[in-house]
Image 1 (tube, rainbow, N blue to C red):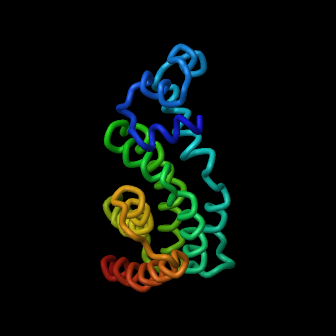
Image 2: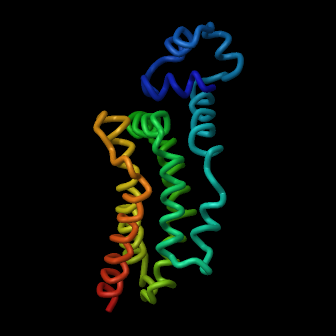
Image 3: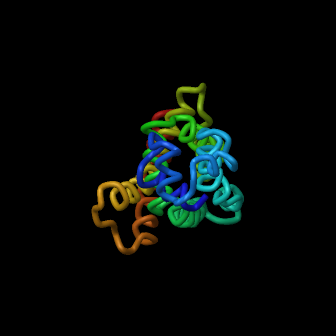
Length: 194
């Protein structure tokens, strides 16, 4: 499985199982003995890379109102960054987006349902932001949360896709991004609903 993850991270999901078998030093029939279809292998890669490493504590941290929201967000994004800012994670995610939208859609739906909606709720609670009226206002909240999330994810793209340098002090950078987020987003949302 680790060899398959490394292979797909390097070559993408358009590569054949024949190439995978040759690359990892097994026969294609042996590969199909464990994974009857390429789709079942890809699903297992998804499970290994995106699901099994998901930290269930993230939801608890984000919902813990005994801690100020900026501190919760900083803790979450620092730990989440350690989860996603790895070569195999970023490269598989990018390759999946280019060739197998189902993997990305499953992950992004999970992220939205478990994290983004929770962050939106906690923003409203912590900053007395009026509740969204309708789906359009809720989606505006989600888009603003995407902005801070994608700023963390993009560090991995810079490093593992573009081969560009990234900041050495990731924790400090995340603190600054969260501070900018909470300094601006609550005011923007409150003003837009006045």
